[in-house]
Amino acid sequence: GQPPKGKKRGGPPLGPWWKPGAKKKKKKNLPRRARWTPSAEPNLTFTIATLAGKDEEPWFSEAVATNLVDKATLDAAFSRATSKSQDFLEAEPYWDQSTIPVNTYKTKSPFIGKVTSVKRIVGENATGETCHIVIDHQGKMPYWEGQSYGVIPPGTNPKNGKPHSVRLYSIASTRYGDDMTGNTGSLCVRRAVYWDPEMGAEDPAKKGICSNFLCDATPGTELTMTGPSGKVMLIPEENPETDLIMVATGTGIAPYRGFIRRLFTENTPAAAAYKGQAWLFLGVANSDSLLYDDEFSTVLKNYPENFKYDLALSREQTNAKGGKMYIQDKMEEYADEIFAKLDSGAHIYFCGLKGMMPGIQSMLESVAAKKKIDYEQWMKKLKGNKQWHVEVY
Image 1 (spheres, rainbow, N blue to C red):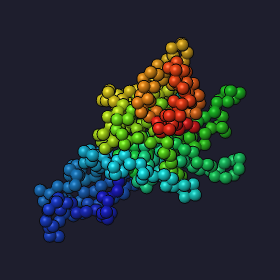
Image 2: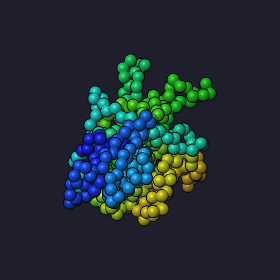
Image 3: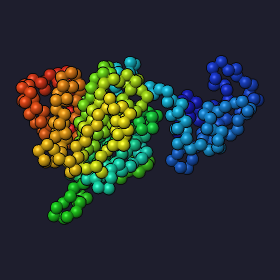
Image 4: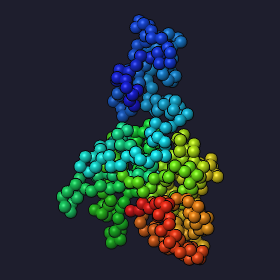
């Protein structure tokens, strides 16, 4: 939705002048300029005035089809034009983490982003509402996969009269954003509500301030933001054969969506190089509560050797003992393979509610005992090798 970089808003003259080695034409032979025109709608439109000469092509062929080309068409044309390679936000070399952006914006000097879209992404029978929220940061708040954005909800804390504190949310997109322009970032947010058993209804006074603000947002809503923050959940891309084990409950899926899109969906240097196996464990209540299942299922279909996807549906599945299937139960089914991968250098990630960790650690300790492994030393080794990554809330 912006003119080409380095060009004034009036836009460049259209014609073959852009081709390498082309000779500059005299002014009288130049076509009239294309005009960038902000419309009254949220999208921008691009107006083609005239094209001089039958042999002169515009900078994207769709421009001759109509006088007004909406932003979606422009984005599609741009995407096709860059489909050979997506690397304009890469480090040099791509796996070098020394230049990762951290705390670009802080509480005292935040960034003001704008919501582009808010979409409910769970089914009718899900246990709660979860939304996918796309935020426009104009390319001024770059981040890497595995980092978090901070959001400061409007208003003041009724307990002390001071502005609300920052809430951190794991970013659910790659550095390129869902639109691949590098100008947006996405969040996966569950609306926090409190059910009062005495009232027999939700108590609005105890609802989550920030999560409800974000889920109720509409396109154009301004967000006061900090970050990006965090280095704990980064992908170790220097060795493209590293196996990744990703464990999530609920919205803890957010960073892994970014991982999986980067390694399998986008045409990035990381995707081209990756030869390891990424294994995703996702725990939710039921099928309607699954998050991004269509995306992960597509990756599984396209990359069956490099991607594994296992679900723990607590209200629909039972574990080996006949109880509810929780995330640690699903992991235990593959305990031998998980331990073998970790012993071979795999990295394991945990993201979600902090209540998930005691059950997982208890399971791992139990398996270690059966294998006659000193659990404390084994865990110390994993952490010492930076193979153990935890981000819970």
